[in-house]
Length: 477
Image (cartoon, rainbow, N blue to C red; front, top):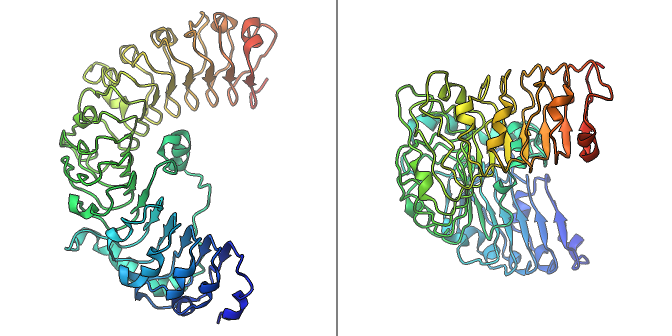
């Protein structure tokens, strides 16, 4: 029980955390919110009623007095419906910026609920059971059945599954490197990730016309997008469809979103792993504002467009694919794959099982490149002479490969080149001639190699004079 008298003298309270208290019924009937006019942050997470899922979320009339409220969280309360009838008092608040209804087993939600709240920047509905389709598909029925056991299975264990602020996994690390994949700078973000969405239509997004960032990752999307699904979202700038099964076939996919800047299509490998199925990337040239694109971890190998085309794209994440197959010796089908990305400055082709980068492929990298990541491959030979064609290159990452040495001849690094990353290779010697033409290098990482001898001749003086960071840890000298 929560005594309302506790809050009578707390009129100046700005933050209130009542999470993990089993206050489901107390929240529905609370009167103490009437005194909290200064409250800005309210956390009601994990106040479920054991072994019960409510029909709808019902917030008390006293909520209308929270006129200063900016942030509201009610994850883990467990209810099936989110509608005007249940949360009308919340929707009337004049300063609301963030609402989060994560992990509540919500099946039905009216997305038009929030369309007239101009102050809102974030609406979170992730990890629920939202499905736009009226028919329940057999292929995700098992997942629904698992979640249907919600109250019993979930509530019998400790509620200790809150997301950590710094998840240390490959996808999180990718997002750190690609800082553009975050949404806080956009006017409004709508998070529908980790739901049961199997297909989408334009009318599904009515009420979201002012959304600039839409998160649809970890759903069950398998359809071929044809340029109509996002027709209502003309202001959309960031779209995350990671961890789905999108079929890349139609050349007009996403073309209805003229302002789209960031498109994350990573972890959609399902159709790429089907033998004999073709894939079309011509939609990329139809996106005039696109700056950042991720096609990572899709096992892209064959039967795809031979070239990518874009005049706007700045950064491409192509890690976790099969360039080793695309650039197979004796084939030249995909040598121009990246060449027509005329504004590209950032390219990540790590984790592509490459043993080398074919010279004919490397000289066809866009000359605009500034950062090139080829780490975490199986490279045992690298043609350093080809760097001369990348006249704007500033950073090269060849870490976590199988290089066992450096050439005994000078490497003509571009004039702009500042950072070379070679850690976790098998380099045994440092020929001083290799670095003799260095002009602007500021960062050199040779840690975790097999260098046995290090003396005054290992690095030329002009290199040492310009370096700001020299990493040599974990070598056996």
